[in-house]
Image (cartoon, rainbow, N blue to C red):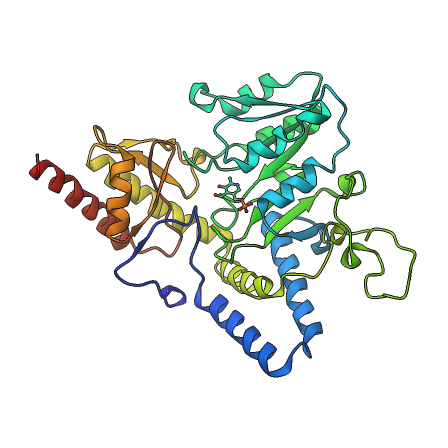
Length: 379
Ligand SMILES: Cc1ncc(COP(=O)(O)O)c(C=O)c1O
């Protein structure tokens, strides 16, 4: 499997929570697509649409949706969230419950509803010992939705979606899940999680390109979302250009107004075929073994783990702090040594994937040791 990844041996790629690398098969799919395009133009357009259909099937499988036609393809997570936020019929006084420490897209989009009289209430995760209970406690009779990331981008905390989903369904509160920090890293199951909306771009744990995202809208809600974008592609009879009467497509295509991103489609479909071949349970087993190993290396050194320690609270993100050191100082020094990571949530965020060599984790930590000993030497 490691021959699917041709990362430079001098690089420690620990940044899947930002932008993942492509497996070889995604590179091959894009190369073939480009060459075919150059030689034959769009002669094979129907085949390209076949790849798009396979992509919808793979995404449906990945989240446990019933039908491929429930999956819309959006530009990115933020666009998908905006389709939901600005499509739902709000009433002034409604509120949405979320998390204060969220990635900006999960705050800004809900705050943008303020001019419709909708407020966003945020739980401070740093003060919460039981996030699901505290999110639920923030809800009142005017709460229409809980909107959260499955996995927090900075701390890596994973929410118990089954618990949230069961409460939301029983209390007629919608559940909107930004799954970008988990999908492709560990199994997701719509049947258990009961989310009404699921969104995720493909460029992180799904190992695809930027600019192509999953938008799942529970079928019961599809027609109740007001559409804000229109064009030839989102109508029921999209191939019949002579027809002047139109209705929005009855399936999730109604959220896709114009020409599809077929270049990205070829790449993401190929990347997801790799995850499907391995199986998400196995991907998760292997990733967990790597994050456990990483936590062991962090503990050995007496660093402070910022990611929750409990396995059921974690996904692929491991964020930690070196006592007495600022992440802002260490981060560029690590990057200069080609440890590709991120500075998030007051610490250093390392995010390996299922194929990352254990040696890569060890080397990254040794490079951090070197940086720390160089700084003590120069005192
Ligand atoms: C939780 C979360 N949501 C969304 C995004 C990215 O959004 P988009 O796909 O709109 O670029 C990120 C990127 O870091 C993220 O961590």
